[in-house]
Image (cartoon, rainbow, N blue to C red):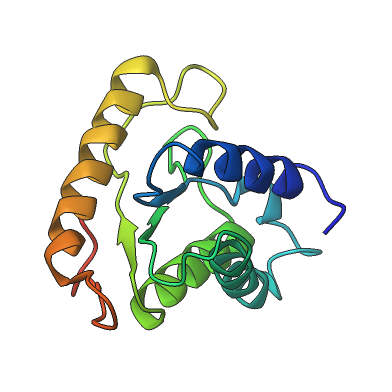
Length: 151
């Protein structure tokens, strides 16, 4: 794509895949797109990212876990961030081998964007629960969808 960080992420994943197995993709992004310029077509772009990652890594059924953006009392979401959140949920609900992971109730590290250390550990636990809930349905052509967001 000649874009950073996408190309770098794909290159690093391919190096890792040479001696291991790609088990899943963890996504926790979107805050920078929560604005008038980017929120409108975010869902289409998010779908393209999922499709492109899977294509570029030759991993059409790799689980794609989409984490909820941070939502903190000190910085309420505007309508654009809400639209990005809706896009994350829609992509997870409608694409095979994808799920949405809630991050509600967690704390930021003082910048109202990034999580503090304990919250990041909890996000890891939530991703793990979501991944394990998907895993049994992941062979070959079966959809590994979770019926509801995972906490």
